[in-house]
Length: 317
Image 1 (cartoon, rainbow, N blue to C red):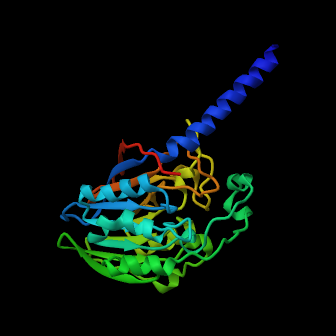
Image 2: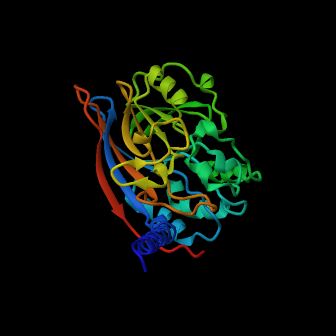
């Protein structure tokens, strides 16, 4: 075999191995990412927030359901779910099983595009195109109202286009949220205005971290915004990072804690799932985030990602 033939064979073998790893191992390598974020008012007591996003659940994903349910053992003070829970019309029971023990904790949620509509098979090259260059293709309508009812029945609060004050660990948190910007369902005007300046935390929630939503949250004086949608890029290249974010957010902030402007912080969850039609992750394992919120320093500091804890499982596909 000549050199060219050997090179092609090696390249093909490496490509096949990479796809097998991305599809068969990493996408089920459940990960807990932890971070400390200085967003509370001076003198406030730390608050532990569990951030869950982008489950993209199908009925038979048993190991994912068990791993998410076990997160209740972390005993968070607050759970925030930033949407895209569903990927199948029969997935509501599986999502509620996964969230079951967490629904006993104080919880907030907004929905994403894949709570409203099922994914559809599409050309995978579309994934690598800028979000502004692609046209959204809707699948069938999903039973998001049933999911919403199940969450609300257990005490979680729907933050879609509302402003609320909640109490966590005896401290006041002012919260506002918008509907999914990816579907252009957001109406920030409905929640616009200065949040309670006396609150220990002013928190914004959105599914897709679009700059057109982040900017008014920052301008109104919110301390922290939580989002999902990006899947952390889903496919990441070592020393380069995410290839795309599937929104207008820059690649450097595709996952984790970062600053937005001079005052506001945000956390973008890489999420727990994938579309059934693109079941691969590379250098970007599925994750939930446990965020320890602490008081702001006198001099603005930097958020500190503390690392990740990993667990493995095998979905019954």
